[in-house]
Image (cartoon, rainbow, N blue to C red):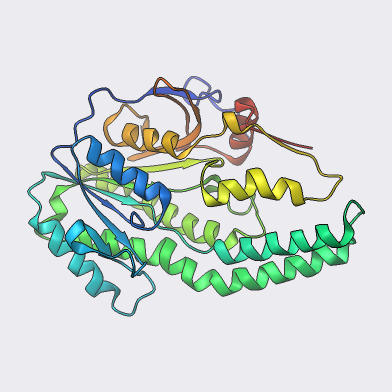
Length: 332
């Protein structure tokens, strides 16, 4: 693979400052999954703090409250287009000049992760510090695969088909389509390289998120010509999320005794770091290629500096090198 031009794709991270005096008073944000996920909730609070109006969506019936800006949006529902139309009616009532669509909702990992962790805990109790026979791991991975298969249809709707349809309906709407200024997608490194970064509990998520990344890349240039910025923001492991907690705190304790995993949580990005990157993608100076702004968050400092990698032309080997340079993950 050709060497990366360090002047353009600085593998030690492009140091990006969070924009000063952020003002979203002219902006309406639509955050999918904002009523259900902790990251979505923090994102909503962040946008509101800077004067933004925020409409969030959730598939959790207990949290739906349109009067408070929390709208039903179940990508697996038979009346998906009706739910989107209901949301768009609220969007039309806003007097904000710009609309930022943030794709945050995701699905497909919970059941496979639960199956894997439960199985590993059982093997840990059964064999204690002894070497676990390979056939035991094979059986467990078969169970995980069954869970992945069971989530695949849901993952495809939530991570690809649904977001694509929502994007299309907003952009094609005569009243509000011209107001869309940004389309932001919160992704992950395994979703960019699903075959190389294979995690046994994650393929239903990574493959379908990858499809949505491809969709955005294919449309970014034409959208840019219409005045729409397209951005993909992702991280290695977001340490203070459900999956991040599994990978950093639980999984290392359950792996075979001859496997050593060292994770420096202080150098791994948090939800707050990802939010800084989203703010930078919306209103900061970000390298853009073929209409796409693409940031891979490595780490951040307390002063608002985010160490990020422009991954719009990033290959797998370069991504691995970037992780090593960031000194965030060491596996031996």
